Amino acid sequence: MRRDYYATVLDPARAAFSRGDSLGPCARSSPGSTPLPASTKAVMLRRAFELRREMVASREQYLPVVTCAELGNMHTSVLLLSGARSTPMFHAITDELGRCLSNDTTGRDPLRGHAMQRDQPPYYNAVVLRFLATH
Image (cartoon, rainbow, N blue to C red; front, side, top):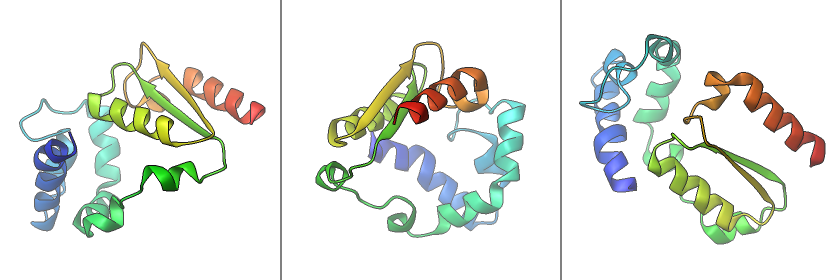
């Protein structure tokens, strides 16, 4: 999944940003995919400068390797949220983080996608506030 994500999303975005193209990577979620909704595209374009800096940095800077053992040594409560409509890669990441972390709380909303904080702020806020009140 990681190799596919690099090949179809991250590496093309890096190449576009390196060519000075900020619009291309911000207009679609991946090469060949359908255009992003206008509201999402607007947010991406507002963050194009930061995205470009992240994408053209060395991969080790923006995607450092972290081992399960290192995560297991964290002794802080962590809230892991995902939406059932998130891509499989995000589910795999959340599931692996939950397996490695010693103090995690995991939630999956059956009706939401990856950006539940944007798509359903009342639900997201309630979950986060409940977590904060109990941890």
